[in-house]
Length: 365
View 1 (spheres, rainbow, N blue to C red):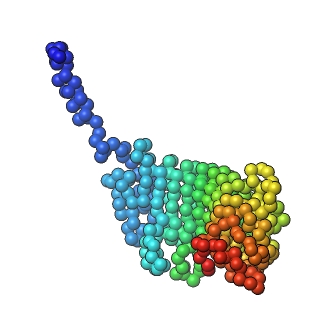
View 2: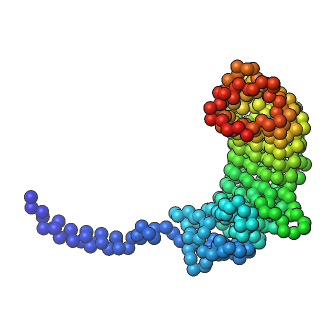
View 3: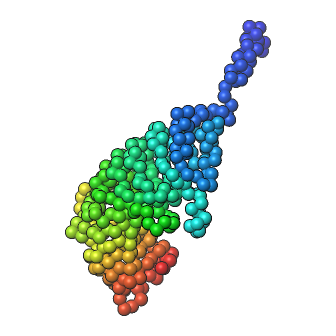
């Protein structure tokens, strides 16, 4: 077949245009936009307010693109900072060694200029008992906030209740021993009403936060329909609302309320939850629970087969250092397969609990 002369003359033109366009297109290495300059300057101001004894943020320089900075994650399409991973990376068991890597100083207002920031981790740092900055409640884009073991103290600002997009809130005491004679102030709340505004919250962790003033913590936390993890350990709680028969809740998989000051019978709501707005025909229903930790409390009463018969997903059960009576039939076969069990101080009866023989993956403590 003979190609027409006119077509043959067009081919070189196509080749020329293609090579010209190709030479002007960005290569694979430079397709991502640079870090936003306003946010870059904001991060530099944030860094200047910090004490960084081990130069963890040594890569944070004005002449470098902030997408290359240690701990900074940015969106490679819009070129905006979305995450700050600034938790202490030290994994040593030595408190002294890890303290050397802790950031300190002041958390700067410059963070407010990171309008796409959704992840902030300042855990295991040393902020000397300073209060949690209330302005963090204005970073409405946050979905993850981790301030545990960062040595913040004082009143937890209720402004955190403005973070309606928050999925994870993790707060707790200092990890490091104070070198001064005066201990840094503990974190505490006057009330938890602000928690009820965190409509997207999935995990709430508070460790050694003084919650003793809030007597309605059960009702307030269980108003959060998306909550799957609740850990309130060593928080000076002394009331589990034993008169409350049920709570409207369906997604809880982790419940840790150990090391508190409960001194009453184990409450009905712990095993008898109202799901999806209807009261289940079978009592003692909490079907999604995987971890249950009620240790180190002065709980009394009897836990029977009826309490546990719907907990088919349970993997970890810690009832140690309580006065609970565990009463089941000799031939009882649990609906779950535990991987961890601790029941020291519980009353188990005169005979060895034969149901333990059915737990093939069990680690006893």
